[in-house]
Image (cartoon, rainbow, N blue to C red; front, side):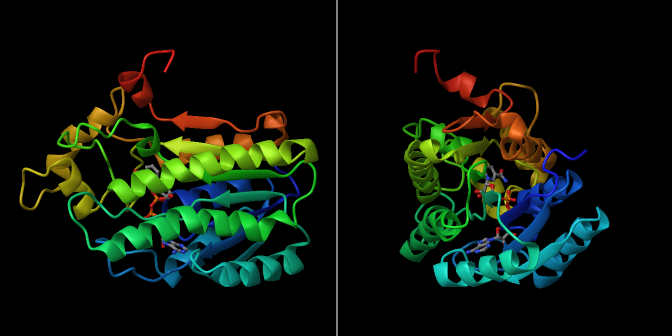
Length: 286
Ligand SMILES: NC(=O)c1ccc[n+]([C@@H]2O[C@H](COP(=O)([O-])OP(=O)(O)OC[C@H]3O[C@@H](n4cnc5c(N)ncnc54)[C@H](O)[C@@H]3O)[C@@H](O)[C@H]2O)c1
């Protein structure tokens, strides 16, 4: 208990899935949370986003731990919305120590409309940068920034026809690669100021993004309408350990560690929580 006691965390995409899990885990360990989410569907993304009720549920779960929650409906693609939400949260909670920039969408493989490419890049890459940019002037020595990448950013995507070789589609892969490079350079810039920045790379994670018809189709392109039972056996290709996915809490524990002072000298890391998936693709020297 108390690993981030008295700190304030800003979490994007906090209404459900990994974002909710991170927000609640940080609260369990003593942080107050500014929790934001778009809470609207995106027409080019083939599965529903979170709802306002989901965001309320996140706030209730944070408050159940005894910590404070400030919520706002904000679209990470719009920096001004994030800035307003963050500054309102800081005014209520008294500061900012932890940034978890993790809202994201998957646009799937094949030939999606160009608008899907734009929405994925704008949410995953520009949205992550926006969340960090609006936070920077509020961060002091000891602060920690954590962005969510994906093992998709680390995969060799040349084998175009392998099921699961570009989960979420090429815009997704590209957005996560670019945000990884951005955080690497940001960490270099911030290190002399005592502010850390790291990327967590989840493998398949048991959330609505993975448990969606478009993702099942991405792993089972041979079937017209694949279901969980069809996709689950193929989900194992992403991991070396014998699991189809990890749970949001597995990612939250990595986020919590990076947020805490236990990781006070860890910066610029690309931390894989991937049940060994990377080991299947690369030799040590790569
Ligand atoms: N689930 C996986 O298998 C997996 C694997 C690797 C990485 N990731 C990444 O993890 C992160 C969290 O995804 P998840 O698995 O919890 O999926 P999810 O779909 O359950 O959660 C994503 C959340 O982001 C919100 N969101 C989407 N667009 C937004 C926008 N423009 N502005 C604000 N909020 C927005 C959604 O409403 C939702 O609450 C994403 O960055 C995703 O790319 C997921």
